[in-house]
Image (tube, rainbow, N blue to C red):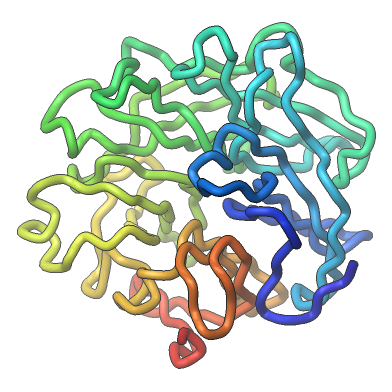
Length: 326
């Protein structure tokens, strides 16, 4: 099934968190969470798998089906959550989040590899045990909601080192200001050392789906959040709206700060419908995609929007046309 509009949706399914990979031979791959539609959308988190769509131009997308589901009787036997895809040494790596049904509040990170970015045939690197568990010496492991927040791994390379950033929480401070972005490092993508979290302002309760883009020697840290510290408005001068945010730094590990127009990625009318915005680059142009978290005239809830062109300027990000949001 091919779709060629800026609104990508699947019949009888919820689709949400998404990430992209550009393959030199086969074009664009869009990975995303999907689950069957039920009466309660919140139940999707307990029934999610990773789906795939392919495109040559970022506009026309063909749905390829589910590529990764829970692994029965293994550590990742519950739902599969957000991750990232990376290519290295003639092999494709897909990092993902899951949990074990015996300890469903503990979030864990796993890995599969394949000779193809469609992962039709893959090897579970973390089969009997997860690839990574949170380091309790550096991060909170029993949050006020009962969860161990350790999810949404995003992997990238800088120099000879590989890095992974992930959603996590600090060990101390105001309860609703502990949301942070964790980081780990590796030399081979298999063996990881978890480091102290990035240096971020204490404004967020959670920092979901983080990723970093380096442009003109500036690190742009992107993430989404749906819960905030009590002093968010006082510290930032803006209302806390569940949506997409970004911070900048001259150093990978921070400190990260907001730009003059930040920390929200969009104006309020866009923040109210967009979540998990992903930036992809093609030649010298940059585009955004996101999943829609509320109904609009142009697209239903739990669908994907994009591509929409953006550009970077003075530590900020501008969108080409904001009137497309109705």
